[in-house]
Length: 199
Image: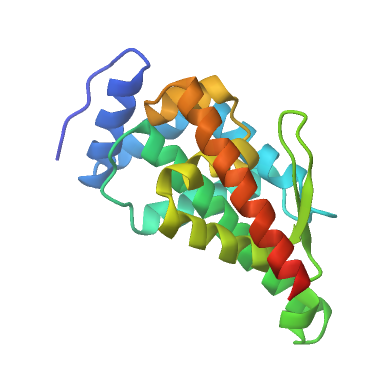
């Protein structure tokens, strides 16, 4: 097991903690969450901001997402990979929660009822879109397959609540690259949402 020594905050420290956690060092996970707690809580709050009548608290969303990651941590690459994975885990928790909640409320008629749970996408003063969580989840999965970096930029912008410069830092790219990927992802998502609404 990798031993940990006191470090200053930064990319190298986060990466070392991620690798130590994957190697089985439980203290690394606690230190990682402690170091990134403010950013992680902000991500969770941002995620829930778009939910119509949320019934899941930001702290619970974060805890459930981290528990999902603890069960089977991936082979972490770096800070960007961690934030993208946490964002995806939060979306997964929200989808699971919405399905369970709607199934309970509707006496098992979950699919039709749960489609009415909507999510509003808006960030940084841009136009907003409203989509049901199931459709949004399916579209984001497709975007991941088609353009992984555009997917990460979209996730971190709309669901992670990060600013352009923060996303650039997390992904190790320039701000103009973030802008370009975000323009593409927004156009792609708008087109796909238009198609899904017409279907």
